[in-house]
Length: 104
Image 1 (tube, rainbow, N blue to C red):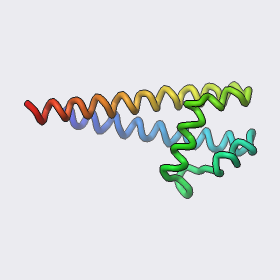
Image 2 (cartoon, rainbow, N blue to C red):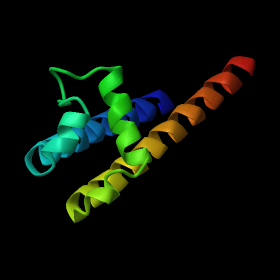
Image 3 (tube, rainbow, N blue to C red):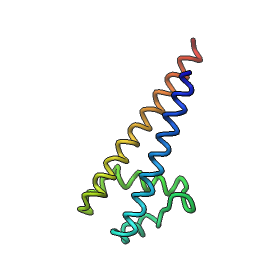
Image 4 (cartoon, rainbow, N blue to C red):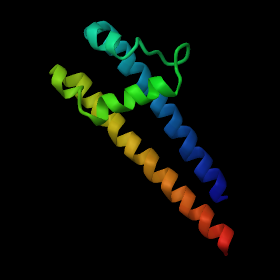
């Protein structure tokens, strides 16, 4: 049963990340084309790889979205940062649970 809950949480988290990514890329392309170009013209699926995700994560961890003085982008970046922190917490908690379950 707990595996199903974990799977649902992970899938919901993935879906939320994809939606926020899409909003971020569309907004940057439309309102901040220079920043969009600097990030390598990222997209959700055609050009999505680890390098694109690293650039995206670095963009909001370093708070570069705040420097653009765009309230929508600021809220979006903050939401993505919170989701990223949640992702890391889920990953660490999952590893701990699996480690303890294996040892028990």
